[in-house]
Length: 368
Image 1 (spheres, rainbow, N blue to C red):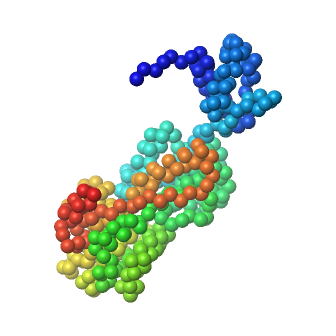
Image 2 (cartoon, rainbow, N blue to C red):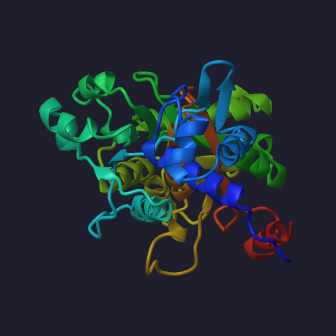
Image 3 (cartoon, helix red, strand yellow):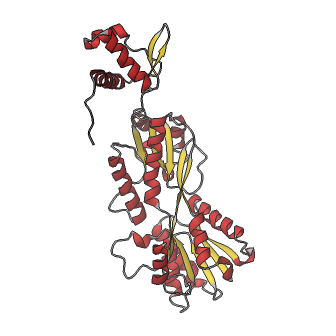
């Protein structure tokens, strides 16, 4: 396609616009008059008048009769963002968190943003946190960094905050949030194998806020699908780390494996799921297991074929979308507290018997 040459007026209008943007003048600031602009570019007053007219038509400037010409909009904000959250440490034992934090830092680079890294230790000490946060206008923070010690710093922070990594709604600070939504994968599971067809549904939950929120979502969906309450039971397991989660589940299910034949165990952590599978392997008949997390897609060198029918919480997507949201809010001066929900994904595997092979069912899903 052929494009004609720019006129002198168009070239100078573009140059003057770039000069104004570089000065980052606030909305309402006066600009050069026609006479001053003519002197600035050594052009005629007529050409100067045309330049200002072009920038008014481009919605960059506006005129006030008898007063002059002014900047119409505040300059776009340059995001200066602090990041308080997990880093892709090779020694991290959770492959989901490692993968998600690795992709998040890569996404920072793709957006051209150099994050100001701030540790949990620094957030606990207002003087240390203040040295870094005062240089920023946005904070991306993992929910795991928010507690009674760090709240004192967060309450005083004047920039935008986006919280990620949580599945509950954080209400202790003013912030936007990006959280996974498990509704559709649970409904999809019900279309494949109805929840009300089980004699017992056992929800295995950890005693922390994320797991409690996940359990509430499962309970809500089961209630909407009119699954009788008498079929549903919840087991609470106290955990402090991934290994502890495995050991707690192993101890519980090794002693308690007497369930009806048509039992579905909804495990809200794949570390629970691994222990449940191990415990039941000694009894012959394995109950159906629907596992949250989908670690098997992220573990390196895992033995054998992936086994657990999982709800993949799309952790990397929620991490990356959180920095997108914060950057957008800073650039558009949007102070709204936004709750952005990222759909989770159901992954069909062998741990649930659906009346056909897992491979056939998965290939059907892939063709949709």
